[in-house]
Picture 1 (cartoon, rainbow, N blue to C red):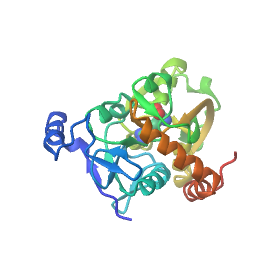
Picture 2 (spheres, protein in one colour):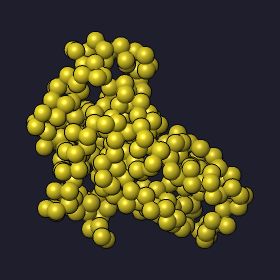
Picture 3 (cartoon, rainbow, N blue to C red):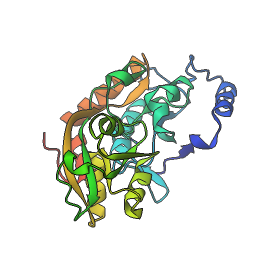
Length: 268
Ligand code: ARG
């Protein structure tokens, strides 16, 4: 499937706003289009979905296409609405602060994003669709057994994430260095700029599987849940997401998507 990727980053925010405002009647408060069932959408025939690349295996580029677990899950929603999913790549914080929705950049966001109270004040979350914890990855022979083992260790964390927040609150003996995205954090590890990376377990286990010189050193049980998000109070769209995801969980579609990206059926 060919999914167009809109590089939101390439447009300065002010210009993007102007374009939205003249773009065929779509002002941020009056959706220009509707999907099946009368759900309001920003643009005719499209479900515009913000994410922050790359977050493999949830969303990443492969052969010029954006693919992954979240992408497949949201495709089910797009299908139900009778439209095509269009991915918009944007900095993670424009999603968590609601800016991406408030400027009319996207209908939904799916970004391996944890539901938090603070974020839920400014964006509308679906029910949790995926369980996550934090983890720490390092060279396979690093022997970092626990948090105490990180004392004095330079560790990469991703800007605006729950992993960074955890590190700041709990790993005060480590030397925390922040990177804008996951690939830059992992590159810093491979370059030797840091000795460890903290991020969600799903992406770090995936990295270690593809890079056997590296291994997850330990997990940190944070009990997070990923949610798909929309503009605050867009309950019509979020109700639809909840309906589609729970149907997919019941009829086995969720499990087969899970198996495709994680290689095993979910434990629960
Ligand atoms: N789950 C973490 C959080 O919500 C990290 C998500 C990062 N996602 C991404 N697509 N870059 O803070």
